Image (cartoon, rainbow, N blue to C red):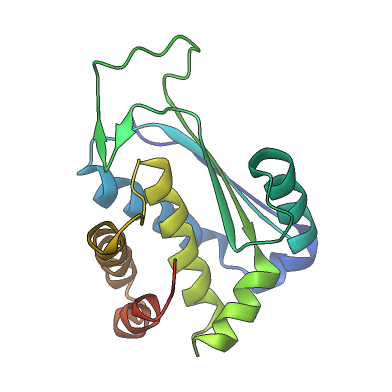
Length: 173
């Protein structure tokens, strides 16, 4: 079964975003992050900072906008491995989760890290998908693992993976 990836882009950002490249990026991140074992569906919404702030406040009790929010629907994934011994009592089978990205933050961060908005958006999308697959950046080793997988996705997309690696190394996430 192949992943069903739904991408919704707020109307005012449509002209600035290559939706086809985002689809390829999402497939790449799912395949690399799970060693091709994840066939679950995901939803991606590219929106503004106000929506992200509202979601962050409502669900995570953080009253600020961030670049990406990832809400896993299937909690049995741990660092790209599906732990089948975990029972899902909520019928979440086949749906990995939702990702929300602030395009305004993408523009802001692309300037900070001297990247194109397209490269920054693909870095952040990859990062969000890896979170859905149970990766996190709670220490240096886990951050390095997430960063390396993100750089590999970017390299496979034929985007500037060297710039991506440099920018990821300078982030405090």
